[in-house]
Length: 427
Image (cartoon, rainbow, N blue to C red; front, side):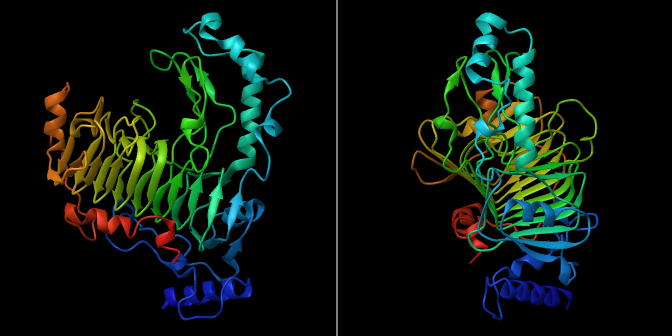
């Protein structure tokens, strides 16, 4: 009964906003839906209902940056409907954010490893100016989401250049939105990161930090028209302007990520941001099901500490820069079941998994189509162990129970391709 009342409020809000004619099934109907029972880890604990308890006053349509920021703030139950394209940069460019003391050419000259060395991170006036520049951009593009919130996209909804932040909040639903290109204008250079150093960016498309009971469903994530392949090399390393698509870090817990379309991105999903035991221990319980990961290069996901259930996902690998899909990190326990992998070129089944100081992963029911051949069952852990050291244990030490259904792996491509992504919810 309550769901029907909220649906009526959503429909009335859309009609009054001129976005829909009165109808039995108005656009935005899905905005009032809570997470179904048993649908992954986010169904545990108090469950995840988002803003489904919102009163009439807190069902709103937003069309620009200012409206979005205002609407999602605070902990009162609320349903926020995103209409059209919201540019979080508001037309501002990297030059507009730049501090007067910052100049990229001068920065590159000062911190060239041949001049600065590789033993320490940059310090000094130019680095300070870069930090001030990055802070200015962050103040513009970050959106802080309160607890008890549903953010849902109407048909064609897109948020460009923004970082949706769920920090120390609970009971949040994000559905039906296309997220693109949270590009960092001022990546940090770290010569101590790896053997050759790395450029590191600051903004994810969606960040969960200390967030609990969150459902991320039927969204699309990509770099849009600004791919990493178009970025230059500085100091012999890619000038990395993108970070995660949807990272889950700093003690976040009870999260379900379902029916999303991740494509053309590098660092896709980091679950746990440090190898050091702390707030993550006993948390980072995440379910990933029926998502498409197409030409994402790594972290789909990379896991530390958490019990992560990865089932019925479609992985499509054609990019020559592919690194791996599932990263087994410190004290992680990944349970991967009935996933379908399409591997192109010279990508081997052994490369789907990557060792990141973790030892346990159950990977069963996997189907692999390699080089255009018919799919065949592959024991991914055995394939990894035959090619690399150290060996991984094929037993994650736990068995998931919070699942509504488990599709056979052979059905995954059809189910995912006809269901995943924002456009399949906004119809």
